[in-house]
Length: 340
Image (cartoon, rainbow, N blue to C red):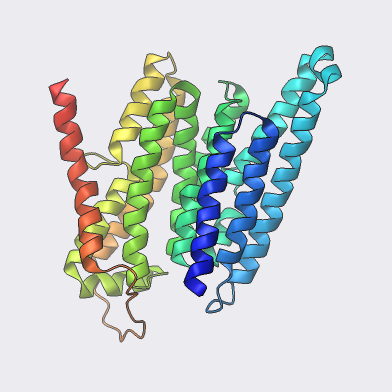
């Protein structure tokens, strides 16, 4: 019965996102976001974790306030007197709607809820919040995307917040949350110029995140000391983790570098030089965070008795297959580029 209700709400989550991004009206988009919010709430409840209820309430309050702002902005924009009287008023309501959508995505400076909610969830809910829950707000944001000072400020603030706040974390869930904020900044820049690059970026980011979450869910890793201990017990898992973690950082020659490369090239070809330079410099903070954890995983050897059993939901064969696909994809993509 437990699996049945989980499958039901998962189906509702996937369906509501599709409703939202394929709707012809703002009301249908808002309706999809609301169904999505109500569907994920039961999945966040976990009897084995005392923090799951707290995270669910925080998530619900923030998302409900953001949905209210979106609805108020829609009503104001659809009022004919507002549209014909003053352009400044119209741009103000568009900025309000964009801010609410950025809040739903967890982008800085509207990120205050994101790491705190992630800390109380299990890995499967973390995976949904990190990947699928961002699709609908990002697609709706594309309808209002313009290259203006507001969006550039959001991009730069996402880079700064993720770099400064992520360095001092010991929780893997918070590290992935700040990593997601950093990648959101890159995705916002791709959405301003070319949606195709955004799609490539999101697919590669989701693939690498799935690989990391599968490893940490299998071995019940939540903090860095657990990571160092488990990695020493499983050398193959250590290799998969290091390759995916470096790929998430976006450094060459790993798969995660490809979307950043495409983003930088597209920005430069559109005459934007200062923005990609600032993005590269500020991303170095998060790369430092990734490299420090990776080197610590390679060098540290912690011999302590472990009391946690591995999670049977993902076996080693599935993890190996998905990781092989993710890592070998870089070879295939390189061959494809050379053929052109």
